[in-house]
Image (tube, rainbow, N blue to C red):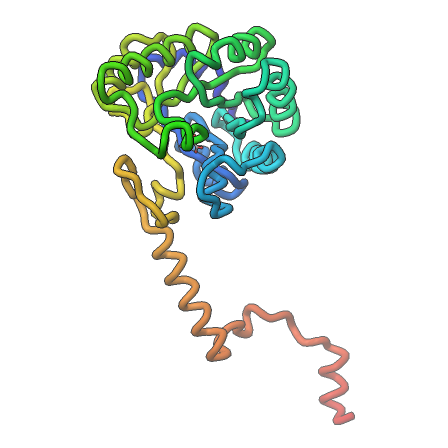
Length: 278
Ligand code: KIV
């Protein structure tokens, strides 16, 4: 049995071979991606990617638990990290602990991810001191979409640059074992990576980070509603699925599917009756 990568294994990768991180929301995806990644992230991006929501704000704890459990079941070596959805951890450290403990216990995942900077440091400290492994998420924080006035690149201008750096330092000092850095100017991503002692996992950051994460559906060309600048497509799953669906539809309409080999043998009793001309 392959041993799963642990939180300390991930933490120890600071400055080493870049961490490979992809999102997964289901057991079949997890099974395919698992051998290729260090971390499988059950991101709350599933609200948009799977459920057609306009933002991640409507994602619930129950949704994250159901998908988190599926990803743990489908994988065997990646460190599975589950996003805490909006509203499940911001109210107080006690609320955060109760919900994070539920996610860890009900899914079997290794860690949880929380969005937030310096304002969340006390909560992260409270959690990590009580045995909850926390991955941070700073820079562009999709759960803050309305507060930020949209999905806007962070770290442009001196004030924003200082805020991103201060947020990243606060989250690391509070005890996070790694951090996603999303949608920031590339020089700021380099500064954060050099100045913060834990692995920085970039998305729309730069290749100076300690690792990279992408939404798998973006990476494999399955989700085409919107393509951010920082996405590179490594496949055309949408095209493949369309080709397969078209071929299936044609064969069903032409009665070419199912063929004999897809059907069960006729009931012998009825064949005998027919043969006997009854
Ligand atoms: O929700 C998500 O998938 C994420 C990644 C894009 C970092 O937070």
